[in-house]
Length: 491
Image 1 (cartoon, rainbow, N blue to C red):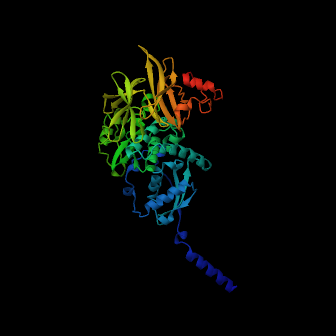
Image 2 (cartoon, rainbow, N blue to C red):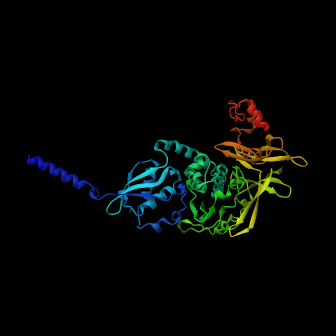
Image 3 (cartoon, one colour):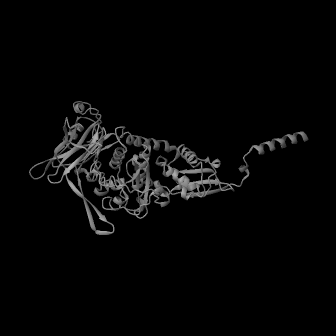
């Protein structure tokens, strides 16, 4: 018996000697709710340098943030960070920054539970998720599909300015700012990057998170700017070592027109200095809180050519393509501009559809108003061609609206889809690879007609196959009736 007891005691001694000392430490549980932009928090602490707010200096900070990200990305129900020696006073900020810096963690809640030891270091972390674990994979697929479609719009012929512009215009094109009559109308999905790629319905945080996710993926540094005074968020991006403001929300003309106008996109808040953003060009931004003591004082792009362009700017083969409006005769030219600023004419003497003014009022002086002309003459690049809408006039009124297509070099112009009875086109757009057009007559009902996915415009309408066309008469069959209605504008 004594021998047996001796063996047992020896075993227990060896066991305790090899166990970590903290196994015997007193473990307490804490619960926090961190500040997340994707949940609509406009906490200025998000934009302050992380290092200045932490109570300790951590040489392994990058490693622990990567570990937290990977754990959340794999939807872990709990994970242990004891070995990183992170103090409980610092952990909530570190945890929040991981999520704010990774918009693909849209399904992670601001609520967090974690254990800590007598020395103040955090051990086991138990995250909460806003999406049911069983549904997260499906949500990720939706996010990744929309995200990668946007990423694939850029190519190696583009410089960083052009890449930033292409993504700016695309996100403005697909986004639809929700109408929130009451606070209760607000939904968490509106604030997330997922909302952008799910159905495009987002508020400013959703615009900023989606843009940041794509820019950083493209190796263009991008961060958030917060304004408590405006209850607003936007981005700053780094181009050639300089930082510039980019506010997609204010450049999306949906905010002016009240509908998703697709290719009607302003550029007043694209690559702007703080001075420009604070004035009428930037629509009077105020109360900016920049991250990491960053300044946006470079004025290189404050007076860029895109300031006067209120439609989508297409980029192909390293060149810009855009509409140059003539205010005297209501005609527009399609212009090609290279990276050096040299311009040439692609197409001219095409009448613009319509126009109105965008008003910017000085918040410090309500009588001080600035006007920006907006013209419904959308242009968009699609399947290696430029598509644009214009109108035919009688002596006194609009006769019809016409969609046109032309090569990037100005050759092989074709016209198709004519709207009779004085109807005009409001906009063109591309969503998930489909070319869309929206007639002005259908603005309120938002009847977007999906054009076919075409690889060759020349033979697209010579085929008798109608499966690629929208069922515009809603009879459940894609057939010649739908084709005829699309081609004649009777839908």
